[in-house]
Length: 336
Image (cartoon, rainbow, N blue to C red):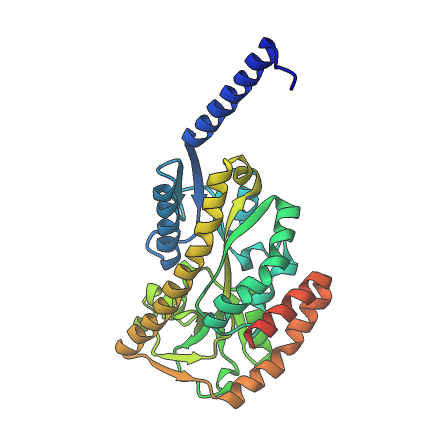
């Protein structure tokens, strides 16, 4: 075998040393990131986000430090979060799917009435099924990729007067937080009014609206039981939520930290599921214990609701194309 000359040996040794030093440097690098959520500091979602990033800090031995900012701590509205993450004003964020509808309307399938009404089905079936559809679109168009798909509890109806069926909704004015809820109330002979969360309770107190669409957890946070005494459980829609990361930020991490982030995201998907389901059940109990009467819509009523609101989904698919059609079909099949 031909002997290596002195220059080759020195060059080889130098390359090995440089490689070793580079590995050590990468292993010792500390990354300081920002994460934003438009939720408040005490929200269940915020608590979950905080637990997730604290786990990343601990598991990385302090190499990945993420500071969580909540509503009002950074100058972003909920509708700004996607673009703030895309431009890396923050490295990670929590984005509500409904607030992406202006930029990515084809991904808003969970806002379609009764497309998915079960939290268990969302987490166990729908979330893994939609990721191959949703994630590439977000990455290609905005350079942002979901780490965790999660959902807030289903939307119910809370009202100042008893609701005993669909006829009870005729003529009522309901606070709605998306276009689909407004459309549904119009179909049922009522009306929907867009009101910010902070204005809901004063509007109910003044009689500006007769009731509101929201989830049990949010209703408890608002203390809605102090102003209305009736709930009508229909599981209208779930709220698709995402924990997302800027693609460039993830790519800058050493391979071991990238792997850690992805693995921890998978672990925490289960935590999000368990905590949200538990919070929803406890919130309903809190409302009934406070004297609220909550009536579960019977199956014929739910079937009728699906029937009369079906055109909303049909029109949405026509307006948003092939990806929307595929996504809505996937959601419905996963949650059926």
